[in-house]
Length: 138
Image 1 (cartoon, rainbow, N blue to C red):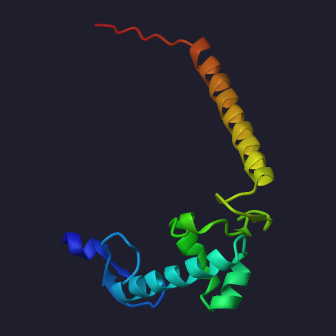
Image 2 (image 1 turned 135 degrees about the horizontal axis):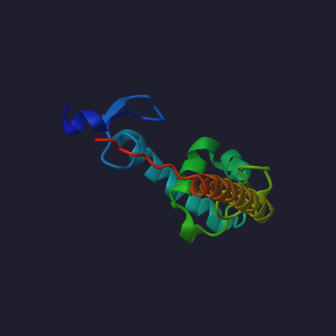
């Protein structure tokens, strides 16, 4: 299989097959997204602190497209954009999770890690206490 075949994808926006050079979109959709970026930045200059819903209603750009552009860091210089936390829906302006959900996820990870470490220690203790020897008769 060639290197090009590994990069063949369907554009998530329009569905066309294209060779992905790293942008994740076909050239036509990438150009369209660059135009959207100009529109959104202009809107945000006049309406700082807008939500995704407000930007969508004012510009007609799909919320899914706006979210992808935010995740790619396309509007970092345009001011704060509020969008929903991926876990609870609270409006945030950076990252994937609000502070409350981020802390809850960290606690969950900590508990799972501690549980796994405890299980590994118990298993290591059991295996270490039993020894076997073999005698080879010649």
